[in-house]
Length: 129
Image (cartoon, rainbow, N blue to C red):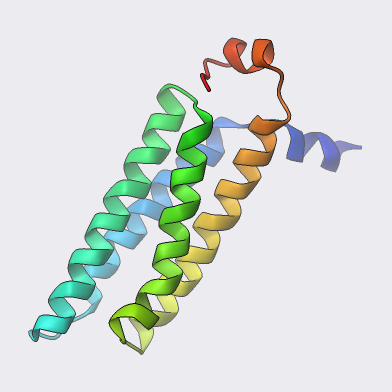
């Protein structure tokens, strides 16, 4: 029963993990290493996605809303798709796919936890629809 309760409650540490994932994504912008225009696009993409995930995690920690998890899942999905859209490979590709999967899984877990709450319970936790 403890495992069921674990998946049914939104914990604050999940938002902190989300912010940490955003920071790591942001740091991968410097892993591109090349000076061609393609690597600038990859670095800019990692910077933007990292800042968005970091900001969404912080926003969830301050004022929980259901749409934040959906946006976070979209950022993770974009990060997974980015290597295929921009056509890059190597370590950065592996990092982005792995980090994207982690962001999506965490966002889906949080969304599931928040979705099962009634409106009164969600309001008590400081959340809005």
